Image: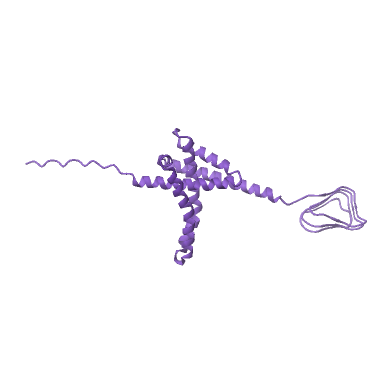
Length: 238
């Protein structure tokens, strides 16, 4: 005679008298003929109760496995949260240590938005192709691998720049570059919660941001440097 039975993993066979409940998780259960359970029979699988066995309480079946859909939703939310925090930190650090980038992005967005999109698409789709070509060339395999590994960071930087550019398009008069970035970042991260739409928003924002960075860098490289005034040569006394 046993008061209660609890089994967490493995097959279970009841052949005697159990005064209370029987709990079996993750394993088959067989209640032999002549066995008696005064309490409940709780199992994770359908039990086998032979003729002549007695279960006085209720027979309940509980699932010990997580629903695949719930696990998928939880994993997607965890990725969304982690990527949101990462892009927020990256964007704030860029604006903190490169304050001049804000003005360059503003000029690129207002003056050459078509070039931003076109050049961004070129960079976004061409770099993976170049990386694959490097992998085909035996002597350039390390370069191709490095380029493939760098794409995730490069696209993320483009995404952050795209968020800042979107914020500047919406807040044209705000003097705070951080406020503009937070607005664009917040909009994109909210869209990221929507299936399919979030992925499409990520691609478009990355393309836009890469193009903005390209145009801004070219403008900065081609900006004329101010000529230094050359002091006049002192007259030589006769």
